[in-house]
Image (tube, rainbow over all chains, first blue to last red):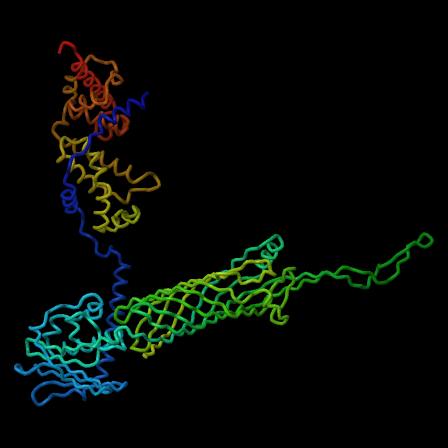
Length: 458
Length: 181
């Protein structure tokens, strides 16, 4: 009854709140609060930002150092007309020349890049910038040229040189085996790189207009060497009662340790960001085998009171031999190894931004060879040394294929070399045991991979 | 986006402005609902909300999650701040003689006979000081000891005010249902 009265009161007194100035009230509250504590903000995020900033700056400095080293001071000189010219001979035979004639106001500012192998002339017909449609690069072009701005277009020699340097490194990484034409920065972007003339007065810029699209989608190969370490778990399942006992015995004796792997892959870039991987990989799964083998046998031993009999009311003892049960316990502790060779067949998707790339791969690991070295239990619970008794093939079969998903971060050191680090998860698709064992066993791995990639151009 | 309350409270304890604003956004409407019941108008309710949150941020260290939910804790503060603001109002400085004028000879309990709508209309006609006591007792469930503590009056005064409020309600109800009127 009392509850009903209270409920009625609640219904009667609970009146809806009209519109009110929530934001204005907060402003008043905020004025009454003490000053915000900047140190209380997410310090971890700030540290992360600081670290990223330092790494980025270091990367830029390192990158610029490479560029500056490639253009030595004695190769940069002033021309007689007051312009500055720098010439660089790259190790691969490219001759790159950058010159600035805009110091003298009525002369042309030009950056000329030539290819020594093809001996192509750096001179092309030029068009003033004012006559070209000013279309800033978008999409892939914008990603590749974040520094492309008005300052670079109309700036001094240094800024243009920076632009050139950036293109030389960044674009060549995006499409290292294609050619850059600067005109395509303003037209629909096609990253080509061979020769380009940038001609400008002190306020206008002219860009060579040529078209070279033939190598846009050229495939290329990369050799990839990876090594990794993973934490592995062997999941055992029995197929019947006897197998269950066997499973329990194996589980109590074998402890899976880590997995080490070494792989060599070939990556074929199919189309744009898609890549196909094939190679060979060796994996070694380490186990620790601990087992006690108990043997029972009859032995004849000497006994002081082996026999006795009653003779004329006296007990006569006779020394002799008796059969006695002897229990021998043999404890085996041994590291064992399970070696497997796979042929990885994977499809990868790469997202690249400047020197950084993320690659996600998914694929099958075709198991072609297995070998187990060390001790194990047979189905009767006896300890056997498989490698000596040539029994390994009974317990671990070939064709225990796996499925693997990998996420890898790659850093481009230069056009050819990349460093990569990633995370991989792998699980066996089929049991590694033969039906004789009456066990289903699959290794499940989660680990890291470190690698080095070397790209080969066709 | 709603953030975990623990994280928001930790941010508030560190005087993080964004966390304070997040806490305000999460509980402003709840506090307003409490305050508006005690306020004369929306402006006064907003002042109550303002005082409530200033008090919340000042005393957040005292909140113990093991003793109850945060919403309960902030509800209590909202009621206290609402009453505190009301006590500053001149109309609250009523003397016992003022209440004596409201004394009525109707003592029977007629709440069972009232509908919710009639109760709402009748409560709206009550003097504010009576309405507040009614809400503290019947809506927020405070005892007379707690009401006395909140309002700074004696326990006996709390009982008498509630009794007068009920009497006055009955009076209004009789006026409504009087056939001669």
